Length: 326
Image (cartoon, rainbow, N blue to C red; front, side, top):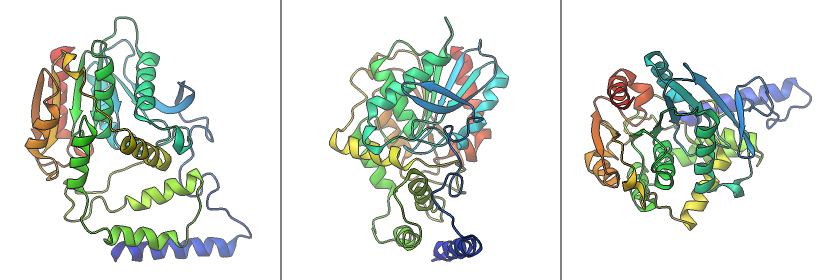
């Protein structure tokens, strides 16, 4: 296994560290994963809804706002930072790492649910929104699902939305997409590698679990992947408890973000990629059917992480849409 060899070199390095130091805790802050806003107060952040989120903005705060919502659950916004370029086109661009993700504050797994994440999104909008300022949501993957969840409850407070390959706006449709992306063999190389390194790196603290989550995601761009990824996606830090907590919640409490979504009247832009074989036009049509006014666009020569991998193709489509509603 190619990655097992890589992990072996990593573990040898760890053993060398242990051999040169009397004591070193792998779970100690900064040893396995980057620090969060709690440990490093120089990281740009905002305090909302009883948490502290890593957040930064680009552009003039008086311009129409584009709130960029990253995927996951459990990822961060590093891979979609190309969207900051929209600030040069007259937009105020806002990013945030979701609760327990990236460099934001960590929380116990048990607190996570879809409503909490929607409430956080609403709080971020309210934190940055000025009086009479237009607001556009730009969500990628899980972030696009989260945007739909917010719009389902607040169909009249946003001026436009860009949805990029949301798994689904219901748990039923999302589960179908996830099944299309996953390998059928539960004992494939990914699982074997994860179990292999788990023998050496143990622990249940936030740092260790986030690190192991990142190792488990290391194969996303391997040859033959169904989502069309051609290179690893950059992240700061994964959020294990956010991912695990939300997955536990939705399995027991299947979501449906479509009850009032049709009441969202502004035109929506729905993006899907040419190379994501687990998605395709048929799934895009299925998921977007709950929107009353929607334009579907396929981005050529791109997979699921199209903002990172083919920004030049996505950018003019997104900009044209935003300028129409600006």
